[in-house]
Image (cartoon, helix red, strand yellow):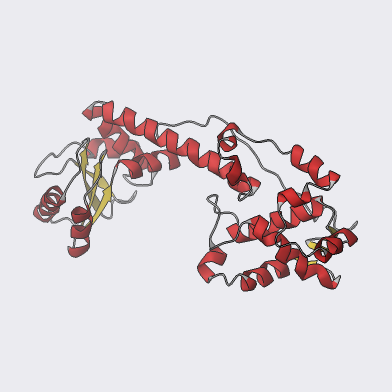
Amino acid sequence: MIPDYQDLMLPLLKILRDKQEHSLSEAIETLANEFQLTEQEKKELLPSGKQARFDNRVGWARTYLKKAGSLESTGRGKFCITERGLEILANNPEKITKKLLEQFPEFLEFKNSLPLSPLVKETENNILLQTPEEVLELGYQSLQKQLAQEILTVVKNCSPRFFERIVIDLLVAMGYGGSREDAGQAVGQTGDGGIDGIIKEDRLGLDIIYIQAKRWESTIGRPIVQAFAGSLEGMKAKRGVLITTSKFSKEAHEYIKLIEKRIILIDGEQLTQLMIEYDVGVSEAERYIVKKIDYDYFSEEL
Protein backbone atom coordinates (compact mmCIF):
# COMPACT_ATOMS: atom_id res chain seq x y z
CA MET A 1 0.00 0.00 0.00
CA ILE A 2 1.33 3.44 -0.91
CA PRO A 3 1.79 5.53 2.28
CA ASP A 4 0.25 8.99 2.45
CA TYR A 5 2.52 12.01 2.69
CA GLN A 6 2.09 12.30 6.48
CA ASP A 7 3.45 8.79 6.94
CA LEU A 8 6.42 9.81 4.80
CA MET A 9 7.48 12.96 6.68
CA LEU A 10 9.20 11.31 9.66
CA PRO A 11 11.09 8.68 7.57
CA LEU A 12 12.14 11.45 5.16
CA LEU A 13 13.47 13.62 7.98
CA LYS A 14 15.36 10.64 9.42
CA ILE A 15 17.16 10.19 6.10
CA LEU A 16 18.48 13.74 6.54
CA ARG A 17 19.69 13.34 10.11
CA ASP A 18 23.24 12.77 8.84
CA LYS A 19 23.30 16.53 8.01
CA GLN A 20 24.40 15.75 4.47
CA GLU A 21 22.88 17.01 1.24
CA HIS A 22 20.33 14.64 -0.30
CA SER A 23 18.39 14.66 -3.57
CA LEU A 24 14.68 14.08 -4.03
CA SER A 25 15.28 11.13 -6.36
CA GLU A 26 17.54 9.53 -3.75
CA ALA A 27 14.91 10.05 -1.04
CA ILE A 28 12.19 8.54 -3.24
CA GLU A 29 14.26 5.42 -3.87
CA THR A 30 15.24 5.02 -0.20
CA LEU A 31 11.68 5.46 1.05
CA ALA A 32 10.28 3.10 -1.58
CA ASN A 33 12.65 0.41 -0.31
CA GLU A 34 11.88 1.20 3.33
CA PHE A 35 8.13 0.81 2.74
CA GLN A 36 8.77 -2.26 0.57
CA LEU A 37 6.75 -0.96 -2.34
CA THR A 38 6.18 -3.26 -5.28
CA GLU A 39 7.22 -2.22 -8.78
CA GLN A 40 3.55 -1.71 -9.59
CA GLU A 41 3.10 0.60 -6.59
CA LYS A 42 6.21 2.58 -7.55
CA LYS A 43 4.86 3.08 -11.06
CA GLU A 44 1.24 3.84 -10.12
CA LEU A 45 0.35 7.18 -11.67
CA LEU A 46 -1.94 9.98 -10.63
CA PRO A 47 -5.12 10.06 -12.75
CA SER A 48 -3.45 12.73 -14.93
CA GLY A 49 -0.84 10.14 -15.89
CA LYS A 50 1.93 12.73 -15.57
CA GLN A 51 3.54 11.73 -12.27
CA ALA A 52 3.93 8.68 -10.08
CA ARG A 53 1.64 8.85 -7.04
CA PHE A 54 4.43 7.87 -4.63
CA ASP A 55 6.84 10.45 -6.06
CA ASN A 56 4.15 13.10 -5.69
CA ARG A 57 3.58 12.23 -2.03
CA VAL A 58 7.30 12.24 -1.22
CA GLY A 59 7.54 15.61 -2.92
CA TRP A 60 4.78 17.04 -0.78
CA ALA A 61 6.22 15.50 2.39
CA ARG A 62 9.38 17.47 1.57
CA THR A 63 7.36 20.63 0.89
CA TYR A 64 5.54 20.49 4.22
CA LEU A 65 8.77 19.86 6.13
CA LYS A 66 10.39 22.75 4.29
CA LYS A 67 7.47 25.09 5.04
CA ALA A 68 7.85 24.14 8.73
CA GLY A 69 11.54 25.10 8.59
CA SER A 70 12.78 21.58 9.32
CA LEU A 71 14.71 21.26 6.07
CA GLU A 72 16.07 23.70 3.50
CA SER A 73 16.89 23.64 -0.19
CA THR A 74 20.57 23.54 -1.11
CA GLY A 75 20.26 23.33 -4.87
CA ARG A 76 18.08 22.00 -7.66
CA GLY A 77 16.09 19.13 -6.17
CA LYS A 78 18.50 18.91 -3.22
CA PHE A 79 18.03 19.67 0.45
CA CYS A 80 19.37 19.08 3.95
CA ILE A 81 18.09 19.11 7.51
CA THR A 82 17.99 22.26 9.67
CA GLU A 83 18.50 22.74 13.39
CA ARG A 84 14.71 22.72 13.79
CA GLY A 85 14.53 19.41 11.97
CA LEU A 86 17.14 17.94 14.33
CA GLU A 87 15.15 19.24 17.29
CA ILE A 88 12.01 17.53 16.00
CA LEU A 89 13.88 14.23 15.72
CA ALA A 90 15.40 14.70 19.19
CA ASN A 91 11.86 14.64 20.62
CA ASN A 92 11.37 11.12 19.16
CA PRO A 93 7.88 11.68 17.67
CA GLU A 94 5.96 8.57 16.67
CA LYS A 95 4.80 10.39 13.54
CA ILE A 96 5.11 13.85 12.01
CA THR A 97 1.68 15.20 11.12
CA LYS A 98 0.32 18.52 9.93
CA LYS A 99 -0.94 19.09 13.49
CA LEU A 100 2.58 18.70 14.86
CA LEU A 101 3.94 21.16 12.28
CA GLU A 102 1.26 23.73 13.14
CA GLN A 103 3.31 24.72 16.20
CA PHE A 104 5.58 26.62 13.80
CA PRO A 105 4.23 30.02 12.62
CA GLU A 106 5.72 29.66 9.12
CA PHE A 107 3.89 26.42 8.54
CA LEU A 108 0.63 27.76 9.99
CA GLU A 109 0.82 30.71 7.60
CA PHE A 110 1.44 28.35 4.69
CA LYS A 111 -1.44 26.07 5.68
CA ASN A 112 -3.88 28.97 5.98
CA SER A 113 -2.95 30.13 2.49
CA LEU A 114 -4.15 26.86 0.95
CA PRO A 115 -7.77 27.10 -0.30
CA LEU A 116 -10.16 24.23 0.26
CA SER A 117 -12.82 23.47 -2.31
CA PRO A 118 -16.44 22.78 -1.18
CA LEU A 119 -16.08 19.24 -2.56
CA VAL A 120 -13.18 18.51 -0.24
CA LYS A 121 -14.57 20.26 2.83
CA GLU A 122 -17.22 17.55 3.12
CA THR A 123 -14.46 14.99 3.73
CA GLU A 124 -12.06 17.20 5.66
CA ASN A 125 -10.63 14.29 7.65
CA ASN A 126 -9.40 12.76 4.41
CA ILE A 127 -7.59 15.91 3.34
CA LEU A 128 -4.69 14.87 5.54
CA LEU A 129 -4.14 11.83 3.33
CA GLN A 130 -4.19 13.70 0.02
CA THR A 131 -1.69 15.96 -1.69
CA PRO A 132 -2.99 19.14 -3.38
CA GLU A 133 -2.68 17.43 -6.79
CA GLU A 134 -4.79 14.52 -5.56
CA VAL A 135 -7.42 16.92 -4.20
CA LEU A 136 -7.50 18.73 -7.54
CA GLU A 137 -7.84 15.50 -9.49
CA LEU A 138 -10.53 14.24 -7.11
CA GLY A 139 -12.60 17.26 -8.08
CA TYR A 140 -11.79 16.75 -11.76
CA GLN A 141 -12.87 13.10 -11.64
CA SER A 142 -16.10 14.06 -9.90
CA LEU A 143 -16.90 16.57 -12.66
CA GLN A 144 -16.06 13.99 -15.34
CA LYS A 145 -18.32 11.40 -13.73
CA GLN A 146 -21.17 13.89 -13.48
CA LEU A 147 -20.66 14.88 -17.13
CA ALA A 148 -20.68 11.24 -18.27
CA GLN A 149 -23.95 10.56 -16.44
CA GLU A 150 -25.51 13.64 -18.00
CA ILE A 151 -24.38 12.62 -21.49
CA LEU A 152 -25.75 9.09 -21.08
CA THR A 153 -29.14 10.42 -19.99
CA VAL A 154 -29.33 12.65 -23.06
CA VAL A 155 -28.17 9.89 -25.43
CA LYS A 156 -30.80 7.48 -24.10
CA ASN A 157 -33.51 10.02 -24.80
CA CYS A 158 -32.41 11.00 -28.30
CA SER A 159 -34.00 9.60 -31.46
CA PRO A 160 -32.62 6.45 -33.14
CA ARG A 161 -31.52 8.55 -36.10
CA PHE A 162 -29.58 10.96 -33.89
CA PHE A 163 -28.05 8.04 -32.00
CA GLU A 164 -26.80 6.80 -35.38
CA ARG A 165 -25.21 10.21 -35.94
CA ILE A 166 -23.49 10.03 -32.53
CA VAL A 167 -22.01 6.65 -33.44
CA ILE A 168 -20.78 7.99 -36.79
CA ASP A 169 -19.28 11.14 -35.29
CA LEU A 170 -17.52 9.17 -32.56
CA LEU A 171 -16.01 6.58 -34.91
CA VAL A 172 -14.82 9.27 -37.31
CA ALA A 173 -13.32 11.24 -34.42
CA MET A 174 -11.48 8.07 -33.39
CA GLY A 175 -9.96 7.80 -36.86
CA TYR A 176 -12.32 5.31 -38.50
CA GLY A 177 -14.56 5.71 -41.51
CA GLY A 178 -12.42 7.86 -43.76
CA SER A 179 -14.25 11.16 -44.20
CA ARG A 180 -17.45 12.14 -42.35
CA GLU A 181 -19.29 11.92 -45.69
CA ASP A 182 -18.01 8.39 -46.41
CA ALA A 183 -18.98 7.22 -42.94
CA GLY A 184 -22.42 8.76 -43.21
CA GLN A 185 -23.09 6.92 -46.45
CA ALA A 186 -21.95 3.63 -45.02
CA VAL A 187 -23.61 3.49 -41.61
CA GLY A 188 -27.31 2.71 -41.62
CA GLN A 189 -27.39 1.56 -45.24
CA THR A 190 -27.48 -2.21 -44.81
CA GLY A 191 -29.75 -3.30 -41.98
CA ASP A 192 -29.38 -6.91 -43.12
CA GLY A 193 -28.88 -9.86 -40.82
CA GLY A 194 -28.42 -7.86 -37.62
CA ILE A 195 -25.93 -5.40 -39.16
CA ASP A 196 -26.81 -1.75 -38.66
CA GLY A 197 -23.94 -0.38 -40.71
CA ILE A 198 -20.42 -0.67 -42.02
CA ILE A 199 -17.49 1.68 -41.74
CA LYS A 200 -13.91 1.69 -43.02
CA GLU A 201 -11.27 0.63 -40.54
CA ASP A 202 -8.92 3.26 -41.99
CA ARG A 203 -9.00 6.08 -44.50
CA LEU A 204 -7.84 3.79 -47.30
CA GLY A 205 -10.61 1.29 -46.67
CA LEU A 206 -8.23 -1.66 -46.39
CA ASP A 207 -10.72 -3.40 -44.15
CA ILE A 208 -14.34 -2.99 -43.10
CA ILE A 209 -15.85 -2.95 -39.62
CA TYR A 210 -19.48 -3.94 -39.15
CA ILE A 211 -21.51 -2.08 -36.56
CA GLN A 212 -24.58 -2.74 -34.50
CA ALA A 213 -25.92 -0.02 -32.19
CA LYS A 214 -28.59 -0.63 -29.56
CA ARG A 215 -30.16 2.22 -27.60
CA TRP A 216 -31.42 -0.06 -24.82
CA GLU A 217 -32.06 0.09 -21.09
CA SER A 218 -31.85 -3.64 -20.34
CA THR A 219 -28.60 -5.58 -20.12
CA ILE A 220 -27.45 -7.20 -23.36
CA GLY A 221 -26.68 -10.88 -22.89
CA ARG A 222 -24.85 -13.54 -24.83
CA PRO A 223 -27.70 -14.35 -27.29
CA ILE A 224 -27.60 -10.85 -28.81
CA VAL A 225 -23.82 -10.90 -29.12
CA GLN A 226 -23.91 -14.42 -30.54
CA ALA A 227 -26.48 -13.35 -33.12
CA PHE A 228 -24.23 -10.43 -34.11
CA ALA A 229 -21.30 -12.83 -34.49
CA GLY A 230 -23.50 -14.98 -36.74
CA SER A 231 -24.30 -11.93 -38.84
CA LEU A 232 -20.59 -11.26 -39.26
CA GLU A 233 -20.11 -14.83 -40.42
CA GLY A 234 -22.87 -14.38 -42.98
CA MET A 235 -21.10 -11.28 -44.31
CA LYS A 236 -17.72 -13.08 -44.20
CA ALA A 237 -16.53 -10.27 -41.93
CA LYS A 238 -13.73 -10.48 -39.38
CA ARG A 239 -14.43 -7.47 -37.20
CA GLY A 240 -17.44 -5.92 -35.54
CA VAL A 241 -18.37 -3.31 -32.94
CA LEU A 242 -21.48 -3.65 -30.81
CA ILE A 243 -22.47 -0.40 -29.09
CA THR A 244 -25.18 0.01 -26.48
CA THR A 245 -26.40 2.64 -24.05
CA SER A 246 -26.90 -0.08 -21.40
CA LYS A 247 -24.51 -2.83 -20.26
CA PHE A 248 -23.27 -6.23 -21.39
CA SER A 249 -23.60 -9.30 -19.22
CA LYS A 250 -20.61 -11.27 -17.95
CA GLU A 251 -21.60 -14.12 -20.29
CA ALA A 252 -21.51 -11.74 -23.26
CA HIS A 253 -17.96 -10.65 -22.42
CA GLU A 254 -16.86 -14.25 -21.92
CA TYR A 255 -18.38 -15.30 -25.25
CA ILE A 256 -16.33 -12.89 -27.39
CA LYS A 257 -13.14 -14.34 -25.87
CA LEU A 258 -14.05 -17.77 -27.21
CA ILE A 259 -14.76 -16.93 -30.83
CA GLU A 260 -12.45 -16.28 -33.74
CA LYS A 261 -14.22 -13.09 -34.79
CA ARG A 262 -12.90 -9.85 -33.31
CA ILE A 263 -15.87 -8.15 -31.62
CA ILE A 264 -15.55 -5.04 -29.47
CA LEU A 265 -18.31 -4.36 -26.93
CA ILE A 266 -18.87 -0.72 -25.99
CA ASP A 267 -21.37 -0.16 -23.18
CA GLY A 268 -22.99 3.10 -22.10
CA GLU A 269 -20.24 4.03 -19.67
CA GLN A 270 -17.49 3.45 -22.24
CA LEU A 271 -19.51 5.28 -24.88
CA THR A 272 -19.74 8.43 -22.76
CA GLN A 273 -16.06 8.25 -21.80
CA LEU A 274 -15.09 8.01 -25.47
CA MET A 275 -17.38 10.91 -26.35
CA ILE A 276 -15.67 13.04 -23.69
CA GLU A 277 -12.19 11.95 -24.76
CA TYR A 278 -12.80 12.66 -28.45
CA ASP A 279 -14.90 15.82 -27.91
CA VAL A 280 -18.15 14.47 -29.35
CA GLY A 281 -21.16 16.31 -27.96
CA VAL A 282 -19.08 18.20 -25.39
CA SER A 283 -17.25 21.52 -25.32
CA GLU A 284 -14.58 22.99 -23.08
CA ALA A 285 -16.01 24.95 -20.15
CA GLU A 286 -12.93 26.04 -18.21
CA ARG A 287 -9.17 25.53 -18.40
CA TYR A 288 -6.88 25.66 -15.37
CA ILE A 289 -3.11 25.59 -15.83
CA VAL A 290 -1.05 24.31 -12.88
CA LYS A 291 2.50 25.65 -12.95
CA LYS A 292 5.69 24.57 -11.16
CA ILE A 293 8.99 26.30 -10.57
CA ASP A 294 11.50 26.24 -13.43
CA TYR A 295 14.78 25.36 -11.71
CA ASP A 296 16.70 25.80 -14.97
CA TYR A 297 15.92 29.51 -14.78
CA PHE A 298 17.47 29.73 -11.31
CA SER A 299 20.34 27.28 -12.01
CA GLU A 300 23.06 29.98 -11.99
CA GLU A 301 21.86 31.35 -8.65
CA LEU A 302 21.60 27.89 -7.12
